[in-house]
Image (tube, rainbow, N blue to C red):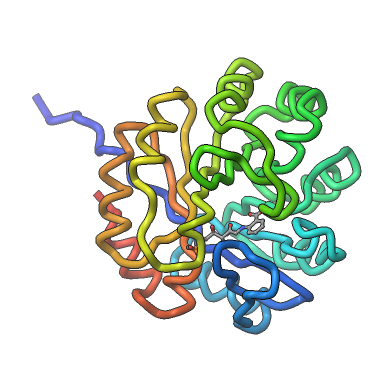
Length: 248
Ligand SMILES: O=C(O)c1ccccc1NCC(=O)[C@H](O)[C@H](O)COP(=O)(O)O
């Protein structure tokens, strides 16, 4: 008999391009004003695509912070990608959701709306299914909205509500780790995976190939992917090395 055991699922990698004032930037703890600029977001996105990425995590930081938006730039970058795109930042109502989905992105990530307008989020989850993910951005177990500047309730109460509404996927960020190169919060990810049967995308803090291997070790518990920002821009490793490290 041939061995037909399927390969273990591989951790998906989502290199991040966060856009502020038209530029690709990295923040520390997601704080406005902590930006380091990395130039043209399209060039950054094309570089990750060229390096073999299957996903791009694309964030409109101005829309998240309420300091304007980069809607045209985001649509341009998304339109130039042959790979899957997850869009995040400031998607909070019918208008911003329609604009985001019209870019042709694979899915959108809702954050603030899940905390402030839960009825609307339940409605769009029902309408769009797998194209809607919810970002659970936390300090401790407290969710943060409005560009991570305002408290928005308890992580596990919100997770229970979203589970019951059929949310397809969660993007979980430990804000204390984000942009710090201090390693992901594996305990948080394990606990969230234990509280949902939906896939979880890990975000914030990846610093090394060992961090990615540790996240790959959580795939059986429900971690589906990992967003990687600062480590790639700081050249801690290349995307090719990262893809190799998590391939099973
Ligand atoms: O995603 C958002 O909506 C958002 C809002 C406000 C501040 C930051 C936001 N996202 C940041 C990211 O998604 C990061 O790119 C990602 O967590 C990567 O973190 P790291 O690898 O630690 O640079």
